Length: 296
Picture (spheres, rainbow, N blue to C red):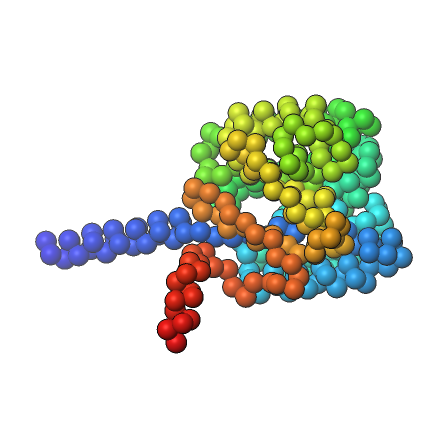
């Protein structure tokens, strides 16, 4: 009887340990706009590559659960040298770290066509897809198509139909988080802000945001702006991440580190000059750190 109880207790502890591990926080890294060639307007990609390789070295050192690259992989659509350089540098990421490529307007052209989308798919893989990781369902969209669908309206209609089906499927699976990843920001300051180059036009923005609310999406990760922005619409947060490559608006190049917890997602942008040494899931309060330092 005693042996049986010991065995039950051991199994129970093992199960509890497994649950604790499954519920432990974890992190991924968002890169955006490496845009090889932008620094010199396509004359070369020396500085773009230097930034990108430095970031990749830090990715490998920190070893996130995955990396998502939210568009503008290159600066000139279809440029073979820029594409080859992008592949070379991405190929340096530890093979155990999944990398999710996302298309941007510099990968497709500002007005995507069926041909430019097909070329992207042939080179980089699907332009929209879903992935799942540890209770997170990631839905990747072709936002250039949403932004300017004039030359490929039927492809946008197909993506919209697919999106609703994927959101319904995700909701039925009860993940901890449904997260949308894409290149263009839905909005930078408010959900009803006027149309501009850096956001999704309001007509399509409103319809998509309503869909996201319907299915419980709380986090939207984007790029394109080449600087950082963070805005909310109710429970929904639109997170726009600055560039790995050339920054704009007085910002700095860098990446976003994203911590995923059961009940929320936290994130911080790091400039290239302030890369974190480690990932602190439960950092000590500043007051406690100061007290400890003064006691030495």
